[in-house]
Image 1 (cartoon, one colour):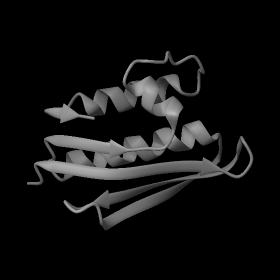
Image 2 (cartoon, one colour):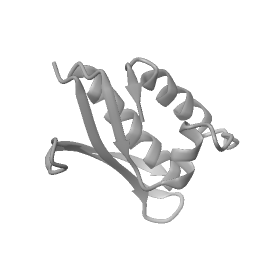
Image 3 (tube, one colour):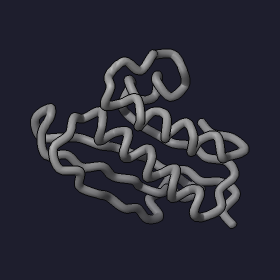
Image 4 (cartoon, helix red, strand yellow):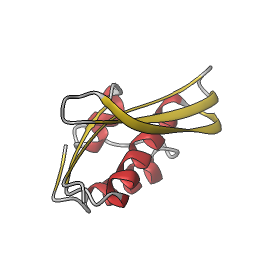
Length: 111
């Protein structure tokens, strides 16, 4: 069981919206990339792609039995929505935000 899980996430699209993808880099204790995975979404916005990266990282953390999860992300919007500083207004982001919070609640700690 991996008690601690740390990952860097990203998502993006060519055009906004446009062809989009997400990625997860699993980090070891020293911050080096120890693995990862990525996926293609088709046509989506940057923010939708970022949320997919977060959700996939949280699903992966749950699969490996993580209890403490730290996610590094460069999207100010996603980070501030997840920690509750920004409201989620866009209808495409509401279900993704809800899914991310549901998954995050399954860990002893999440940051």
